[in-house]
Image 1 (cartoon, rainbow, N blue to C red):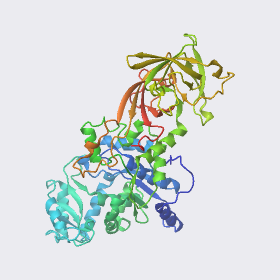
Image 2: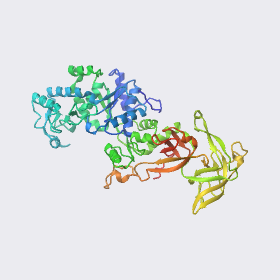
Image 3: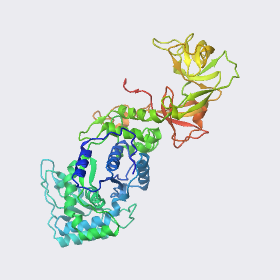
Image 4: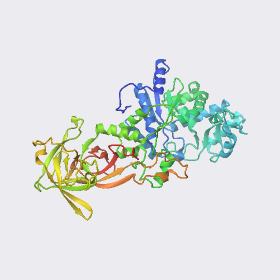
Length: 576
């Protein structure tokens, strides 16, 4: 297992890590065991990255192990496509699991444990429909009522449960429920369902089963089977913890010879102490939605171009956008681990992207909105090669050759025919420094109607590298690419998918669909220096003065370069 975080090596101290340290100091556990247990019913998103970094990070920090376990107890919504994407995402974040497990690996154990609960009088088969169960459950202020089937005999319950497994009943006809307390103040303890009937083929077990365990039952027993010491989950499961403990205690794997034998046959590790569930606040970021239902709707309604659309908060999407995994490690560290729910501003995430890419991204020249600039005092056929550093802060990145000619492209916004106050770039009669070339003066402006199409300039030769006036000062410096050598490239300028901070807010009768940002993507034909055409897909670069970009992992090649903007150099939303 690898902890890919490139953040500070100082000791982290949050309430979960403190619990782990205390458990180690007291010799409660010989080995720390965690797990990341996604349900394969969709793609992972930014919110999941916090749990991944926490579970794998703690196992790595304390010399333990972390399993990747698929909670595949709901076959109607699960797909092998999601399984492979999740494995890819975890590895992209820099982690390798100790073992790959599935809740479905333990279906037989879950079944045997359920029969044990029936024999103990802790579970019964109930014939109430789903609507009737809701009616009997009560409310937060009113207790529930016992099911009329709650006092069935042990023999009758066993017989019915076995017939459920044999496929004799229709979907929803019966459930196996825990017998706890219908008057409990915690609604999760009001005789929750443990098994339901679903005549649906499973991706791992095929048609072997037509009854499937409920999440609360399968999850805690999976933790116990795998020897999980610290079951880390988000705060919405805090009210489920009593049920988690009830199931683990009543099944009591350690003292169940038949179940232990079943586990031993499969070579599975058995816990010496029961797992402890610990809750922490989830990662919430504004200007996005992270509901799987809403993300699926965005894809199915073609409001985005798929699960890996770079505007999506899925890990596949943000990876394609150019976000490096180190940015998610930084985000997890900066947000921290707490019990307090909060919403993180999107700018915090963008800051993490900038900080991570500033270290690793090579610098390149590109012009996104080109305006022709001709140096009239140089020979028209002049061709030179200039040397530029690949990274201004790290000499180990080396240098590269950048072709130069008197015919250049510059950014249109670097020229103003009628400059506003404080504008320090190129203007008629004004001077500016061309990056790595020297100081140029705008002598003439060529127009087509009202549109400026060309600037005719002279280069002060004494300000070229090595010249006698190389240190002459002017206020502005702009970048360029040689129009003779530049390569055409498609550049996709991505921005936030939503134009409001809380797209989930439906107080004015609107939905998240009404808050989509029409400017979340804009595609332009740019001119880039030749070195960019030959880079491999998923190469992170900084277009000087423009932002951080990545060569698209699907569409980019040398004959058709495609770059995606990961983030601008500065926060452009603060003023908004």
